[in-house]
Amino acid sequence: MRSIKIKNHLLIKKYRVLIFVILISLILTSQGYSDFVFSYDISPAVYYGSIVLGDIDSDGDLDLVMSGQSSSARELKIYVNNGAGIFNIHQIFNPGLFYSSITLSDIDNDGDPDLIVTGSDGAAYHFKVYKNNGAGIFSLYQNLSPGVYLSSIATGDIDFDGDIDLIMIGDGAGYLFTVYMNNGEGFFSQGQSLSPGVDFGSIALGDIDSDNDLDLVMTGFSTGPGYNFKIYTNNGSGNFSESQSLTGLFTGGSSFGDIDSDGDIDLLISGTPDGSVNSILKVYTNNSTGIFNESQNINPGAMQSSIVLGDTDCDGDLDLIAAGFASGPTRYFRSYTNNGTGAFYYKDSPAPGIDSCSIAIADLDNDKDIDLVITGSDGGTLYFRVYMNQESTLNQKPSIPTGLKISTNNGCYRFTWNPSTDDHTSQNLLRYHIAIGTTSSGVYDYASDYIALPRGQANIGNVLAVGSAPYYQSRIPETESIWWKVCALDTSFISSGYSEEQSFVPPVELKGEPTLDNIIIGPNPYKPNDSKTSSGTVSSGIIFSKLTDDAAIEIYTVGGQLVEKLEETNHDGKYVWVVPTSIPSGVYLCRISNSKGEQQTRKIVIIK
Figure 1 (spheres, rainbow, N blue to C red):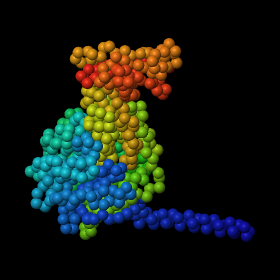
Figure 2: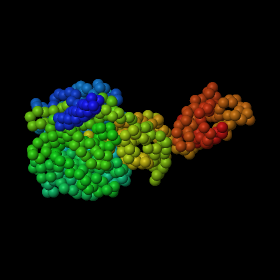
Figure 3: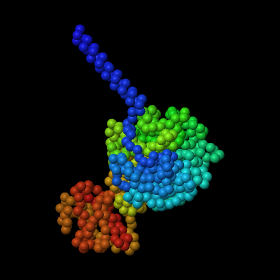
Figure 4: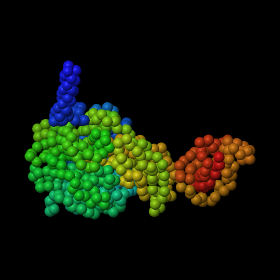
């Protein structure tokens, strides 16, 4: 009997402990327990501004650009990261701006991010382009006209010529909605003017119809139509036409991302539909052809808001952070988790409720999870804060892409590779960034190797065709020489690192008077284990003789990958390719050229 009482007593204690653990869990949840933990405040705090993250000084961590209204002035400042997520002031711009929008993009394909900013200094409107000197110092490069405020800007290669173009909405000389085309060196010229022009809205770029070009979503206020929410599709050359109009709204945000992992990109939107304190936060899923249908109405809504998508809990899908002014009126800041099929559920409130806000997320301290930076106002106090993610689930890098190949399509190069794999992120959700050069190794002058982080959006990278058969279709003629590499990006914006650079030099017909015709290559075919072919001067390789002193020889695989550059032996017009043991049997291409611009391509056969 005593043993039964002891056993019952132990069971009661066990259940009491279990109940206590459950209660503590509920209490922590009700008090806003979060994976995001407040780290520190940055000064000065601002609202009515914009923040964006990017590696401005090429040291491997993410730095920060901020604009907005502080308690005493308009601000436009850059802060550099010490590698552990601590930001220190680096550069101050004059004038400072509010009611602004900023973006970091490599507009001149030199490998570092440049800065584009709009906004008001209180007396005039501005639209400025600043170039990076490579060390994170920015200088004014172009004043675009007209200046604008209450604006939003987005960048992307809309005409697929390898450089970054620009789209702007805002209020300047009236309501505007304008496309600017890049000349390849970062200088912008006005292109298409879209209708209607709007202010106090948002724009975002993404391939909504899976045709390998960037399409466009716009919200905002205009005269005549009033509030707008419109989708525009790209004709492939950078010209947009309206494809869908939804219930209009303004003072909100928009973000593209594949929230349901079905291979197409979906859309989240916030704002007010009527200019009152009524507000919305809605999810629209893509029917795979670029038509959006509402799938979830998240309460509360948000106006004067900011919304961002990213994998905050390291489970491979896209989660949501939203802040703004809700019906009531109340301000809030909320984190939502994705159930894996594109439905969002409230998780916690990691920060004070704010509006007139901006949110940026990325890995600030290089621990492979998403951290958080916010600006905004709670109606009395201004904020500029950093929150670090304490998620316990480890997130590994995606695998580096393999199987890189090139082919031609309509006379231009198409680049393909095997899809990467990831510990959490599905192949549908993995994104890629390709770097391409046309002049020499390591110089990516067609598509930069710098990876921009567009604020709020999940579809980073510059490759639009993803999933099980990723590819990039360029407009580089198949007669050009090319050098390229590619990396994978997961839903936490973590990069795999780039693959080894691949190259291809197309066979070129001899130009001018032929003076290379007397070249002798032997033995060809080359059999390293055959004594009959190894009885020449050099038994370990292939001899190229009777060349001019200024000749150059390069060996390529038939797929275009550079194998070796040969140097002249004894300065007597003789070159030797000592064939490495790692070289497999097969056909190789030998490109021979001289200073006169004459070139020949010969085949070499290796048999092992």
